[in-house]
Amino acid sequence: VWAAMLGTSFSVIMRMDLSNIKSGMNKSALWPEYYMNLVTSHAMLMIFFLIMPAMVGGMGNWLMPLMLSAPDMAFPRMNNLSFWFLVPSITLLLMSGYVSKGVATGWTMYPPLSTTKAMSADNYTMEMMIFALHLAGISSLVGAINFISTMLSMKPQYMKVMSVSLFSWAMFITSVQLLLSLPVLTGAITMLLMDRTFNTSFFNPTMGGDPILYQHLFWFFGHPEVYILILPTFGIISHVVLQNSTKNEVFGTPGMG
Image 1: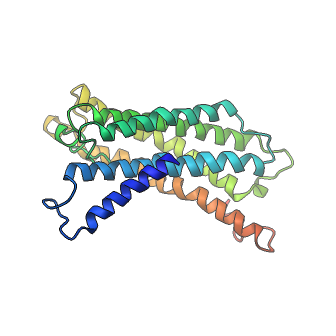
Image 2: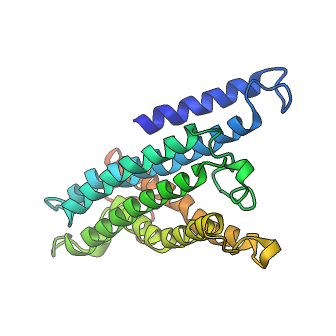
């Protein structure tokens, strides 16, 4: 709820600034760095702290045990751990946006913007953002392991594979994608952190690094992220359509499953 309110307020501020007739880099009500800080914080909040926790963590934890006739998730305490990792994560994210001029790199954090001190201040705001993403990634990974374990071990023996609801399948595929793609993003931002802190040159072209490598690593996560965000929604829509129709199953269930 807090992520939704903050992310929406940042979006409203950006739209109000752009709606100004005199808006421009030299006449805008906001400094360019502050505007880009709002863009970065808005995207991070909406993706990592609203849609993913709400659709994957919230709806998944609520509906998946019910649809599998299970008393609870396979590892309830892992659910607790996944939730509480979000608290320090969102705290670090908000702190990174309010220290000095914040992080003005955009949500993709491409180098050289993310490795240039001028775009992310001189007081470790970028490092705070990276640690926030690390904690959010751990939260999502723990939840993904729990969903996969629940799907494989908590399904009743009498329930056939093809009789499992599409929402449960959507959560299972989403969790597998998270398990495969999140470690790559974690590695990419860790390399970024090392470039900033330990004087390595993974993405510094003047020292033999390759900034395009970061883009490849980031979008290895970014492309599956599209399906990670939309698959649970498709599963919910399929279930709602099924319950409000006279059919026994959604059209094309074997193909989608």
